[in-house]
Image (cartoon, rainbow, N blue to C red; front, top):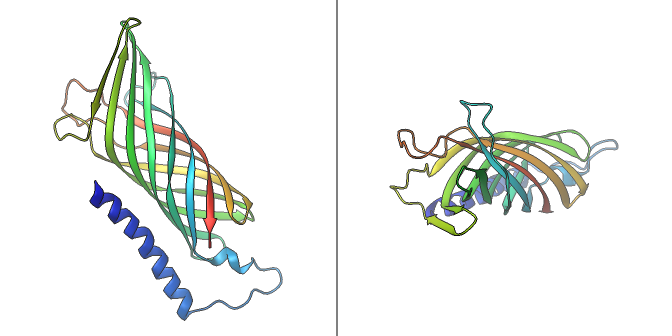
Length: 223
């Protein structure tokens, strides 16, 4: 897992380095009147944090539903502009996910901890507003299952064991919008969903669910 996180961070540094070299040898002219400020076309590094509200879905049963759990996400990203309207935005985020479900014998909660690495295209149709979309790779860190029957509580914590029945790497998708409150702070809202099940296919005692998360947060930008 340390290798995964290190590789993801190296990707952010490499993206920034390539863009910086491009701008070193191909500097932009000063903008004319009516053009976007030059800061709009600079590489920006982001510190990101916010709230997660998550549950799971069953893609084979649209009547299936579970309760939500609150968590948080935090991490870093880099925005590499192509021009004033389009940018590439990879990120590395810790993300807490999970769901709750009422059973005939008690309450079941599952909390999972992930490293999410989204690769996003950012589109800026008008000043100070943007929307993003793109794929995401998620790496499982740990799973905690808690069952409460009203009299006692039992908790099981799994740390990425090869035999626990859970997929350790998932492919998903991300869509979202952002509002720039000022040049250094962006308010953002996103929806993410895994395109693969959390459980390994063929493991009969674990249900086939897909994570979905609603996120709201802030990104603090450094030029």
